[in-house]
Picture: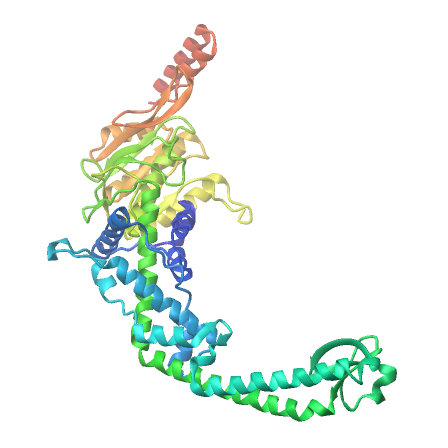
Length: 518
């Protein structure tokens, strides 16, 4: 679909709302990429997945996929045969643990008839318990392995501990013994991997050893005593051996994971997809959504549809049909009365439904598959292009007319406005006639009497209006199919206290002007 429609209908806000219901980073990424589909089989499959997930949430609660992190770089390293560091192995463990929990969540005793589209996804998960157990046995945290990860690592770490204890013992003896008067501090520090004493600069020649560094002020030098140098060298050798043993363990674990790479990838893809599906289901719960029926007849039926970006406690539901007895709906009524919102609701329901999302509407709602949704709504002219309101809208409508076909849904707000009313109305009728003759499903809003008359006299075109309460001088936002909206200027003026004589004079003038025009 054209990118412009997503801006006009604020579809990014729908994506952002959906993303809040995903629990993993990869799942969030899929939410951000949400796009309408144009094949009815795909749409129905996605819709049925959302419905199945919503039903499972109702019975078992919502599963969490929070431990699933982005593994693309890890999977690439495994494919290239590069051993994984400790932290990456933990991410693999988290994935397999999530697969195990998800499989338990998805496990249920059902008949063949009770199966849903999610059963196969849950059944395809492979927790790889042996791999899980081995990683858990070896990996302590993001930065370290357990000593028992391998016999070689355990042996070398014992030697390291014994050597470190020996060095510390010797240093304690030196600190509390003959070198005490020469020290600026009794703490033992490490410089360049060597254990050092903090010696006063003036006494540096009193301590036998190698200078490894100096304090910032220059008042202290750090000396590795000769008596511990040999043990320190042994320690460094042992630490090198430790690195070798760690590399062996990481290599073995990485090889173990790589041997099951096909299943690791599959787990990753399935869990990410499940998080996305359950996010759609959770999103549906938040607005009490329902699954619309889809058709290819270009027929739309909305029962009590509510725009998802509005406060559900305040929004007035919309009920309408398009594509049955009429393929074009002309909506009239006062400004801020809900005309534009009605159009946006129809467009947003279409995008949501074709994305596999439930829609905020009552049961029995029906949508059709459109390959494109075009809209000309609001003042979108560019100051940089120096376009007037009329020119900007007409430029957009010309583009729409050049590409729209029977597989398109067209939404046009205040067609023909921004120029001479007579010419604007004439252009609007001509444009709507073209769209109608092409069989393009269209919703248009207007104030023009000529367009209302066009709808009254043309088969397949229907009028509708947004109700206005003259008593309260406010719109009710209810859509009335088959009714023609009035400007209500006379009624509003009378209600506000304008003299009856002035109102009657205005009516007479209007009648005279209309007689002259027609």
